[in-house]
Length: 243
Image (cartoon, rainbow, N blue to C red; front, top):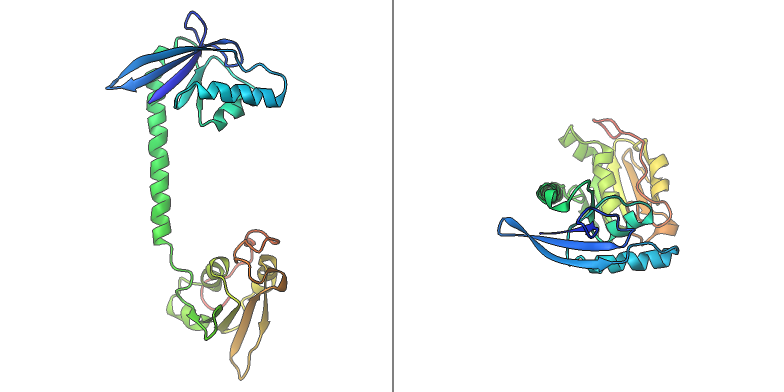
C-alpha cells in the first residue's frame, strides 16, 4: 500500500493548492518506508482547464498511492483529486503519525466493498429466472402464460411479481396471458413502460395480449424503450387472485 502527503519543507501538512513537497510512503513487510520527496507547484491556476491539468500532473507523481494526506483542500480540486481515485485525509500534524490509522481505514473500506460485491453476486445467483412461468410460442418472440394457474399454485405470488420481471428483462413481440380477470395495474403501468395490451377473451376465458407499443417495438423491455425510462412505480396488486 502507498500513501502520499502534501508537506512543506519542515514536513508539516500542506494544502495541495500551495507549492510544496509530495512525500510518498509505502507499507512493506509490516512497516512504513519513506520512498520519495517530489516538489510540486500546487493547484493554483484560474482556468478550469489549467486546474485540471495541474491536478492530473500532481496525480501522475503519486505512483499508485491510494490516499493523499493534506492540511486542507477546497473547491474543484477536491473533485478532480477524487476523480483520480484518491481518498483525501485532513492532517493537523506530521503525516508519519497518521499512516497506520489511514491504512486501517483504507483496508476496512476495501473489505466492505468486497463484502458488498459478494452480496450482489449472491443475490444475482439467487434471483429467479423471470421467464420460468412462461412458455415459448411457435414463433420467435412469442410467449404464453397461464397466470391463473401460476397464482393458484403459490399464494405468495401476485400478478406483478410474475409479470413485471418478465416485461423488464425478456425481449418479446407478443405475450398471451390467461387469467381470471385483467390485473388492475395494466392500464396505468403498461403504457408508461412502453407496452400496450388488449383483451381477446372468448368463450368465457380471460385472455390478454401484451405487446411492445409501436414506438418501442424491438427495444429491450424494462425501463429501456428509450422514451419512458424505468419501469413505473406504484400500482399495486395484492396477493391472491389476479389483482
